[in-house]
Amino acid sequence: MLKINKFSSDRKAMSVVVRAPDGKVYAYVKGSDQSLINMTRREDEQILKDFQTQVDSFAALGLRTLAFGYKEISLGDNVGIQMEGNGAVIDSVDDLTPENVEKDVTLLGCTGVEDLLFENVARCIEDFRKAKMRVWMLTGDKGITAKQIGLTCGLLPPPPVNTGNELRRTDSLIASRFIVPSAHTDQLAESILIEL
Image (cartoon, rainbow, N blue to C red; front, side, top):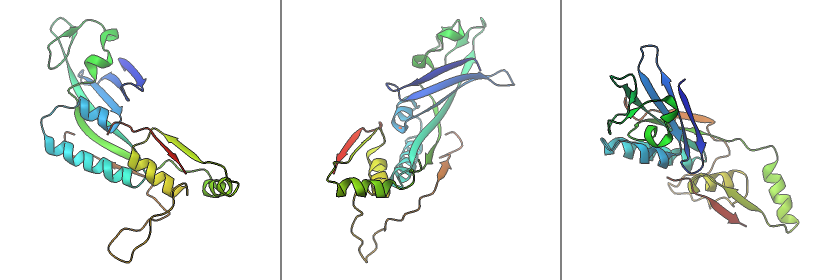
């Protein structure tokens, strides 16, 4: 590993720069789906649309999403590291900042992971309500993810169940999923506050 650019809430991402066994240098980035979309090359809009569709489907299940991308960093003739795109030569690994690493990345995919609730959360929320206490939810999750988590823990009332073709809420969610939208393959995390 040559460099770690630690997670920042401003960037909503982190990156590592590594040298592969074949000598090539790669930057791998992980972060919110919108932050990675903003870092991505705009070569294939269909990949971006497919990616966003998958992220939205994970979020609708109440899964926390995380996106991944990479780019190759070419070695310059003078042994410095040459950044693709702008041709700038970086003389030191310390100069591999997020600003020059986390751009023009190729989207790899996303994950959706259920952050399991503690036991009896729904019962505790109900007890608070019976005691006439206000219950608040603060989150940095996407709005659609936060809504599903609110439904799962009983913070939000379940939607009415119709007998038509509408989907019904279930109490079990898939614990994790992974997708790679293509062979070469973040909504800015929304802060929401729900008061019931």
